[in-house]
Length: 157
Image 1 (spheres, rainbow, N blue to C red):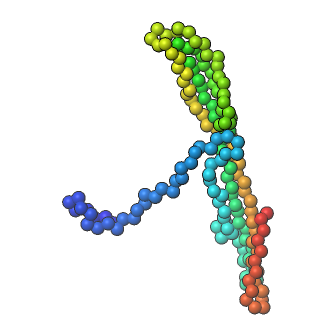
Image 2 (cartoon, rainbow, N blue to C red; image 1 turned 90 degrees about the horizontal axis):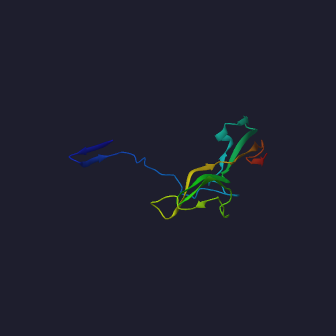
Image 3 (cartoon, rainbow, N blue to C red; image 1 turned 180 degrees about the horizontal axis):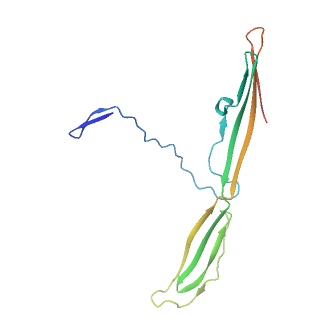
């Protein structure tokens, strides 16, 4: 609840909901580059895949989801103008590599300019690396009838 009188905060019981959980990062591009998305690890209680055998034992299955998402392809169109002509498209596949394009023909094509313009446009970023790794882990908990020892075992499948 928020009460304001004559532009003065009299009462402010409001909750702050302006939270930013975002993270800044460079857009991943090239081999072995991926978005910084952490794995999602779900326990048996999160998945709801657990079964109890009374006071004797319980069996549960958890799931881990690991994304691997990125790009190794960016395309663009190029065009020459001013005192040059030419056009085409270009495909980038590695950020550390130089790329040639052309042909560009220089001449006196424009009476108002004495230079050539090369314009890159229509950039497209492809999500061509899109892998989701799903793994499961089972957990067995059992109680000994004699004493209060609790033992558990878990293993990835």
